[in-house]
Length: 328
Length: 311
Image (cartoon, rainbow over all chains, first blue to last red):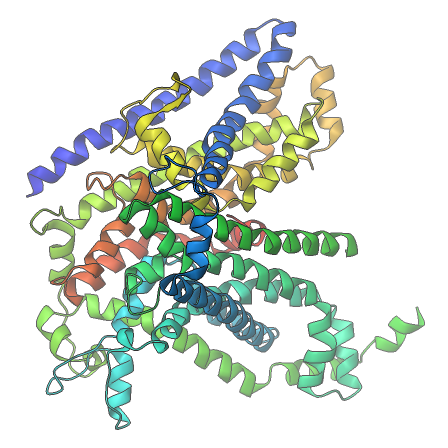
């Protein structure tokens, strides 16, 4: 078995090394040509060498495919005949897809709100805490874990043992049994299963919210908070009337950023349930339509819907960031 | 002035304020949440080093009453394949081989473009910069199918071959290019913002000394932008290493190029992959980003703060 592994890795390693060497050689050569060229030539060469590759890649690899997907969303499954808005009618009328849209809505509502609330609470509680660094890094750690890895981790927490003579090895069911409840197959139980999947993303995103909100809280001047202290404001009032209003802009940015990430969530659903048991979401259904059913029309229409949902949020986010920058 | 004077606190008052802030209850709650947050990952690690028989018959928490350690799971998942599937070791290599160029290529091209957009004076510069910035809006999903077709069929418009089929499907190359393309808008945007801050006098002094645009890049601009590059490097590294969608689609289903995330996802889906293999496999795939995370947390945070709008 080991022998055959090296049979694959060998050529792959060769390709890797050759590609890296070739890339460096090309860059080096371009620089050599550029700096040896006459001044008049240099004026032109600098655009081609510095700006050319990025622009070319973006036009061919991003702009053209995006436009083509939009075009394909008005075509049939094999992109051969124009069928108008049929794919969009399909997306908004088929009961199956309505569950997909409903689930996506659940994700988009709960993930940003829960992550931001918990992140905000932890950021505030640890704001002046001694040795908060350890606490924060533990909560932040899931950010470094892939969605697939997180799915395995949580799949184990949610594990179900059908034979009730055997002990539960999943933490959640073990706790259920400990308190005298019946253990259950969580992933089959709709709509609870969607919320259990949502919990995985909340687990990941809370650290992100905490880190960014915590950085914002550090910018609230000590004097302001201390003045509120002297006025005898309670902890809650200090938070809601002093700290929160001062970091409002950042809260909005965190909420919108998590919302965008949530809209595109694909890995967790695909890994944990495969989109079955009424847990499907747009990004996973888009993948399924395009790469399983090979229905490019319907897959593309879902991609466009995703895009249309993202645009206003990013637009709002950018505006908010601009406001923040001008305020400072 | 009067206001700030009123706000000055005596040392005692300051201490009292500090004490009230670090309320023991709040700290205790924070610690409890941190523990809760860590338990799932911790249980994965503990399970992965238990013997297979123990894992499937008792909860991982019994490990502390009855500890028995075995690295057999790791040996099995890393070096023994299952039927048609090669061992994890090969996918680990693939993850490395996918990630290294998929980090180097976009950053190199992005520094170039950012330099040009920040310091070359030409018509339409702002329009180009704004367009690149706006491209961050495009979700991956919107480009997948046509980009994949470009790799597998080339580009033919009206019978004229503009890009031929290069025969690179099933190698790392489409994955590298796809990651490069998707990483570019954010990288250019961030690095541009950084390069803009280089003092104009420095650039002008270089021009007066007769340095051309190329030597100026390598002698002045590149050394100055190392910190910004480092921050983005970590961000892009974690993004690529943890990615599933790009590896899945642009790997064209080839086992010989698929990264670990793809294999792990597959293992979850197949019956017969017990927890002993899954937990060990998952830990192998998350250990590299975890090391990077703990070692370079500060830079990671910086990259994250700047790059959180990535599409």
